Image 1 (cartoon, rainbow, N blue to C red):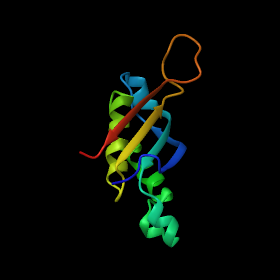
Image 2: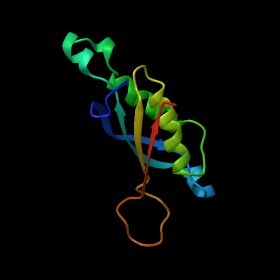
Image 3: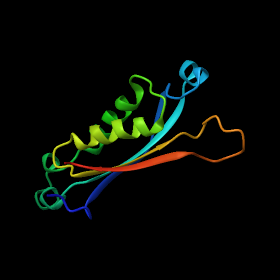
Image 4: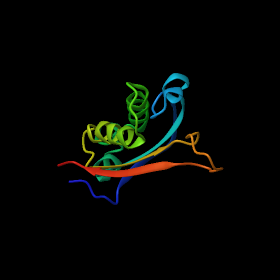
Length: 123
C-alpha cells in the first residue's frame, strides 16, 4: 500500500473543453486548469531508478487532459470525479487529489478563480 507521504503532482494542466450549465459555455468552450496529485509508493522506483516502478507523469497528464476534453457535463465536480477515476486507474496509485479550476466561470463579480478539489482513494 502506498504511503500517502509519497506523491507525484502535475499542476496547471490546461484543457479547452465545453463543460458548464449554460448553453454559451457548451457552445464556446473555455479553458479549464487541472491539478492532480497521486499517492504512490516511490521507494522501489527510487531504489532501482526504474520508470516502470512509478507513475509516468507525462502519461498521467495526457490521460487527465483527455478525460477533461471528452463529453461535456454541467459541473466541474463531475469533471473532478472523472479525473480522479483516471488517476486511480494507474498501477500503484492509492489516492488522488484533483483540483479543477474554472478561471473564466460566468460569475457577475470580479474574481481570480473558482475551483473544486476532491480526494478519492481506491476502495
